[in-house]
Image (tube, one colour):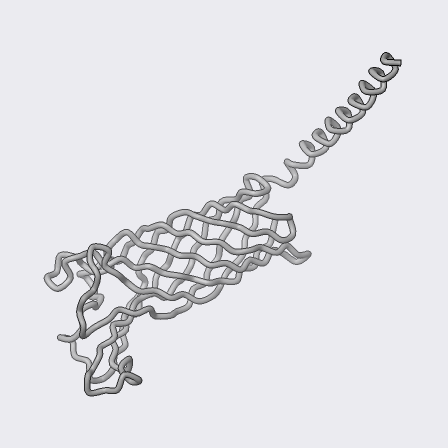
Length: 239
């Protein structure tokens, strides 16, 4: 009786191992078709940005730095090295900058923000990102991290008419301040695969390592770093 039980156990094990091996072979044979896929697409949305001094806290009671909003958009290409891992290379146009707000004691607090100077900077950004995915193939959450390179295309400014040049502490000047920047970027979102392509909704935070304004000028002794938050909707076609 014990011999028959042993034979029965070995038969079950043989069938289980055989099915596992066949499944593994089938997976290996199909994985190369799932891997090494490329996708190319576009993403567009909004950006908010400002500068800050990491070496000290601003203590000027007459001026405050605030976030300003702008547009971001561009194209990107992804290479899926594995089903749950990809590399992304992009070229984006992003409107960045900051707003310097002045408080006038003669104006009520409800109108205090009306005295301002806004610095507009238009950059081309080149992010290089690593993506990790969690979830099923059709709906997945992703996390991303990497670095970026930036080059300033143009700059302009806006101000309330009563604000003079002497009042402005943080102003970009051509020929003096930096056009290039490099930094880190990270974020996350989710991706939905449909019959017509991939849709991505995500957010990113980027921090530049280069001081936007020349830190050697007298009134700005510390580096001023530009940090940006973007929210975008993207569409990609797989190949």
